[in-house]
Image (cartoon, rainbow, N blue to C red; front, side, top):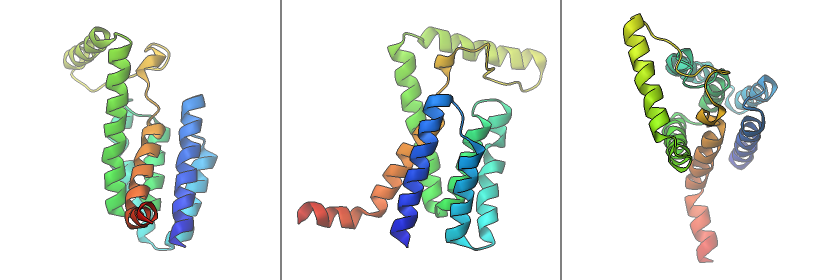
Length: 175
């Protein structure tokens, strides 16, 4: 049953990544499908805690509009689907891949100065106002400033799943 769960997670992650790439949104129906799949495999009250923890941890980033609501909900679904150690690794790998993608995009499009100015004006605006404010505002900030985080999550999930089958892969390669 472990293998079937892993295939489900990979297909789910791939679907979320495709939706995020094409529409910049992750449908709630897909997220509910992931929650249902996680509950099917877990059937344990701690599952609800594993769902809630990412929501609590990531709410500040959502409040500042540094990540979208769909990204927060998707991290929560992974919190339910993956073991805690795997989820932690997926969490950090996701942001690592997103950071690499962001740096590549900024550098390759010659946007280093523009992005540094954005950070500077954002910090100055917050200091002047004396309160937190959204970092990204859809409609006023350019679309190239958005990284589809679900794609980075998909890559992280693939890495986590491959590492969980390390021995099987080694035996297959050496055979």
